[in-house]
Length: 162
Image 1: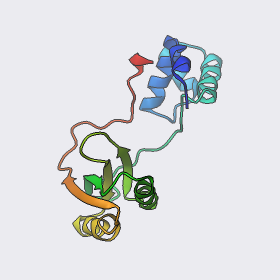
Image 2: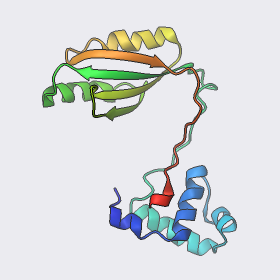
Image 3: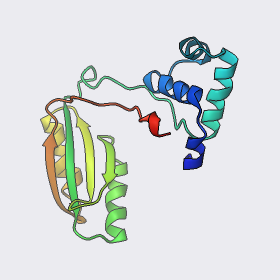
C-alpha cells in the first residue's frame, strides 16, 4: 500500500498515466505514450515505478453483469449483535467465502457493515440471505435494498488529490 508521501511525489505525467490506466488497464506504454505525449520508454519506466511503489494495486477486467445474467444487485445493511472481536471475526470469515458479496465495508454509525451483493435472480438472492447471512448468531439485523438502476459507477479514483 502506498503512503501519502509516495502519492505527493506524483508529477503530471504520473497522474496522466494513472488516469489512462484507470480508463483502460490493458493499455501498454506505446498506447499511453501517444495519448500523453511522452516517449514509450519513459512511459514504460514510469508505469513500472508506479507498480513498484504500490500505486497500481492490480489490473482487472470489469465484466458486464447483465451479459452474465446476474440480474440482482443489492445493498445489505448489517448490524452485529455485539461488537466483540469474535463476532466480527465470525462474520468476516463467512463473508469471505461468499462470491456473491462483491464489497464489504465496515462503517461508522448505527450499522456495522454495508455489503454489495450480486446474484442471478430473486430466488438466489433470498437463498443468500436465508442460508448465509441471517443464520449467523453474530448478526442482529439485516436490511436489504435492491438496486433498481445505477446512475454512476466507477472504479476510478480522484487523482487531483494525489
